[in-house]
Length: 219
Image (cartoon, rainbow, N blue to C red; front, side, top):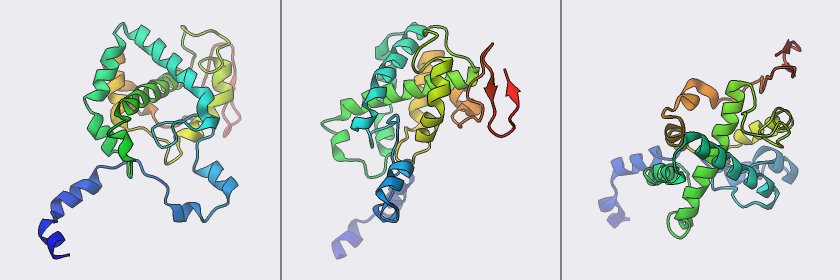
């Protein structure tokens, strides 16, 4: 204890606790609920965002759609994929520090996988936010696309929005900023508040969308 008193840097300790912004749900909180409630409240149901739930079997189906989002965004940007990767690598330590109690493997053996997760999940989120912000499906996807279409968003947006609110299922805003800056030369999609879940997820010409609160028809 005497040695620790000498070595302890109180200001350094304060700095340590100021870095995390994405936390794990404490076990004692989870233990206050049943297994089914835990699945509903603390675990993503459709898509993993960030490292905490990456690789879970029931979320695997969405991984191919993340890859498609990256391909579309990169092609639209006219820039090489390497620029997106480099942007994330440039702030990798800040992104790692954003996660509380992150396993050491992400800083060492699986550091490259962490970068990949940030690019995949970040581009997927940006694509979703663009659809919601524009209130129409991107034109470089098929009209019957299972995710990035009017029908896809009508079917999946509620579930994806709920997954975006799961405490352990997050990626740092810094990752979104960096990716959007490479994609569009600006981070307006993030800055203008599109990261907040919208009550009216999508409106498309000829496709009526109903607001669950007002019951009014919008187009």
